[in-house]
Every structure is written in structure tokens, then in C-alpha cells.
Image (cartoon, rainbow, N blue to C red; front, top):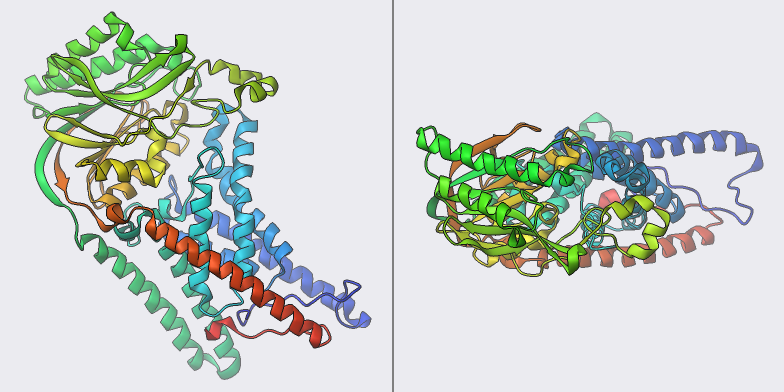
Length: 557
């Protein structure tokens, strides 16, 4: 079945032409108008999602992204749905990850192209699912399936640009506490498709019985939208974690020289000194009574890109700073192996007296940024990749580290974009989420805003406050409901102290793990199969009727 009000493309004859020859000019003109409308809807879908995401933050456009893509492909054949999906995905991805051009324009466009590809099968699936009753549900599930696959393949995945990531502290974010980012995406897409279904029914009713009959389906769609938002506001508080104790947490943003270039890690000594100086500045503020004594201090990823395990001078700088502030530090370090050919990106607990202790190693690494996959092959064609002289190796253990009487759920930079690292760190006992990060390559590009929005959603997902410590911004503090209470400037040193509740207990999302995503993905897969069957039946029906389209109305379902 295809929604009423959307023109079903006619079945092709053996010659590829439809209708009488004398009608060809008029038919061709109508075809061009309909095709232009579909292209505009596909472009509008990508733009709506782009503007919903930071740094624009027009979150309410998120549902319209799902609605417009559905509108673009309703009633079309699969090959047309495929390239309309390509148009929508490219409209989103090319500008969204423009910040990747720090690695080169070719890298940026290659990654954008790879991300765009996922919109092709999704759009085809939506076109097929539109033939089914209850198509808004199946369409929303297909968005979840697309994002689930994109977050895993290839090279570990790249989940940037999820529908959910535009909803850090909105009526939709509450669903994260029950089904992680997958359920948020599902509810955003469902809202858009339910609105579209109501609109299509209203159009049909208007044609059949006038304005009065058209108001009822439109009102029903709006009521469903309001109900979804109201439920999202309520659900995070059901079974929410409780406060175990209050921790005084400080963050330090030391800043780096020459932000926005790929060479900032070369200024290793200066970066280390900047962050050590930030700790000393915090200690001064404590002594002068400007801020309370912290229980622990969080510093960014790559606060020291020097192997301090083998550099006594660098280690002494950090120890002196820890003693000055009289609190343990979570310090971003690099541990080198094999003569510098391999390294681990760590956040290390640095005790004022005992020095380095427990640590967390970053689990999700940035391909072509922190390691070169198939190095021998790619460096043969892209010589600048040789500047990345050592490959980072991922950790495997959850990031639950204890310091200052509080267990921190630690996820380093790119980790936070994936569901698994934060979830496992919280499940292992993490009470406050911390995200040490190094976004100096991306200052003033919107990337830091996008990452902060993801962190806000993680706070809601697991019912914990979150702290972001960045080398040069954006550092931030967010409450368990996703509200940002502190945000640093970019490209400036900053220190901040906050009293935060250290939480105990787990949200349903923490307990359920990947099950909601898996369940919704199975629903989507079933919808794809059912859609293929429905499409074949429709084609057989069209052939049996001499090429006339055999269509009904999905809006009835």
C-alpha cells in the first residue's frame, strides 16, 4: 500500500513508456514536477537533520528529517529510492563532518561519501515499508537499523550524525534512559512519520469530504506527537539512579598552541606545561578561597603526549602539581611501545604521593587520525599519512577508575559517540561520567559542540552528571538531565570546580544494554522483507491490470 496523496510511479511497459503516445508530453511534464518535488524533499531531509544537530541546535527539525525522506520515497521504485537516499545522506554528511578536512579535503569527502552510502539501503527499505500497514513504525525502525550498522562498520564504525544526537536535552532525550540512543532515534523518526501520516490522511479526507473531515486526522497526528514528547519528559525519572554522595570535581583546560592544525601534538612540552600550570592555578584559587578544595581533578586527553613513565622530568612536573592542589589527578597521557611505533592513549590516576596508578585506555580510535589501517597500502598513495608516526592500539577494559573516593565512568573523546564504552563503565561502578578529550584540531568548527551534545545524551542515558575536560575547549559540566551548567570558552585556558552527585543504581538503558537496539533492528529487518513481498505483489497486480498501478492507502493503516 502507498500513502494517499503521494503519486505512485506508474509501472513501466515493455518499452519503458506509460500511457498513450499522445499523452507523452503532458505525462513527461508531470513526471518532472513530481521528481523535482521528491528531490527537494530529499534535500530538505538532509538539511533538517543538519540544522537539528549542533552547532545549529534546531532540535525540533529532527522529526521533519524522517518525515521528508519518507515523503520523498513513498510510492517510488527501488532504484529511484536509492538515489533519493543518496541525495539526502550527502546533504547531511558533507557539511556535517567538514571538520574532517583537517586531515585533508580528500579524507573529508571520502568519509562523507562512505557515511552517505548507508542512506541508500535505508531509503530503499522505507520505500518498501511504505506499502505496509503501520508504516510509520517500520520506517522509524529502519532509521535505527541504519544507525546501528553505521556505528559498527567499517573500521569500527562512525556514528556521527545520529537522529538521537540532535536531542541532548529535549523532550526526546528521556527515552535514552530506557533504550539508549537507539530508542531516541526511533521516537524522533516515529514522531515525524506519524505527523506525515496524519497530514496525508488529512489531504485525502479534504479531497473526499472537505475541511471539516480533514481536521480530525491532522489533530490525531499532533496529539500523538505531544504524547510522545510528554512521555519522553517523564520516563527518565522512572527507576532513576540515586545520589550516593557529593563529590567536588575540578576540570582543567590548559589550552594548546596553534589550534586548528594537525601539528599541535608536536608542541609536547608546551602542552604539558600548560596543563600543569592549570593545576597550579587551581591550587592558587583553592588557597585564596575562590573555589572549594576538590576531591579530584580531571584533565584532558593528551595533556601530556610525552611518555612520562620513562621521563622523570615530566613525571615530576605532574607530581608537583598534584601535591600543590592536594588531590588526585586524572591525567591524559600517552604510553609508547616498540620504540615509539605503538602507543596507548590513557587517562591515568595520578596520586599526589604515589604517582601514576590505575588507568583507562581509549577503546575507539579514529582511523587515519590515531592509527592508519592497512598502513603499508594507504601510505603508498597518501604520503602525508606517514606523519602519523605511531599507531595507537585500543584498550579493552571498561573505564571505571576510582580516585578521591569516587568511581569515574571514563570515556576518552571518540569513545563517547559509541553506546558501549560509557555503558560498560557505568555498569562497572562508574558514578560520574568523565570525558577527557582533545579537540584542538577542530576548534571553531562545530565538532566540539557536536561531541558535547553526545555527552549530554549519555548523562541522561545513564542517570549521571558528566564532566568534559578538553585541551582547548569545549570543556563542560552537565547534570543528569542533560542540562549544561558550565561551558568553557574555546582556545583559552580555563579551570572550573563543581559539586556533583555521585550516583548509584542503574537506568533501564544501562541494564538492557544493546537489547533495545537489537530488537528495533530486527523489526526493521522484518519490515524490509515484508516490503519486498508487498512490492512484488503490487507489481504482479499492476501487470495483471495492463500496467495500471494497483495501489491502496497505507494511511488507512
